[in-house]
Image (cartoon, rainbow, N blue to C red; front, side):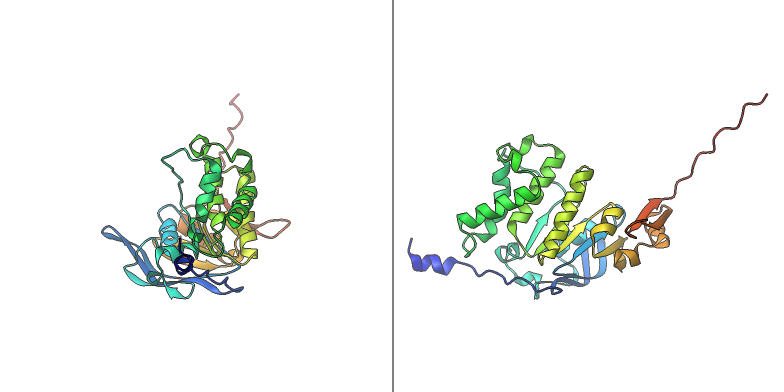
Length: 288
């Protein structure tokens, strides 16, 4: 191939955002699916170096908001900016260098080996200075080690358990090395240990300068690992801020339609959200 032609095809690499820099920003964002508007007037800022958790009951709009922040769903109103530009001004290859998305479910039609699935995350870097084989190998090996899937690198993805598939899918996202990570319920299929592992990875990526947005159902995980939380309710943001500020019993009881208590952890002070349960009254002594 003509080397001049090859140089013309090489794409520029986006600059890494600085600490606290706005990586994604929604202003008055509205999303319509079918005949109904499922997100209304969303104002949300995502910054480099932080973990932002999206929480709320089923159907509140968490996954829809995550897809909107990824520019995978077109807005019917408002604006979404990614890395300083309106999302619609980025081409698909340019977006893939700036944000990586983990959907709720990972499905593949062919029995690709685990290592090849993770390597798929490197596809956006082809034709850039960081798209050589050695860099791909380093990124794939690092992502697999972080998610503890190196031990079954040669196994078919289709032969894995649900939790193993979830970790491989996350490894693919990590290998992509985009500055904005958008993770939809990454802990849903995982056991206790691996839930903690995934959230520690989120914290590590934020510590390295990435912006991480993660949909979580476990409010305890959100309180322990997120810098900020956004509580969604009925397609709107009911509250947003630090977990200690937002996780208030009255708000959460109303949003989830379930009475809860919010207590500080006795050692760390992290909010613990516990459902209020009615204890059955033990039977009295038998009549004599």
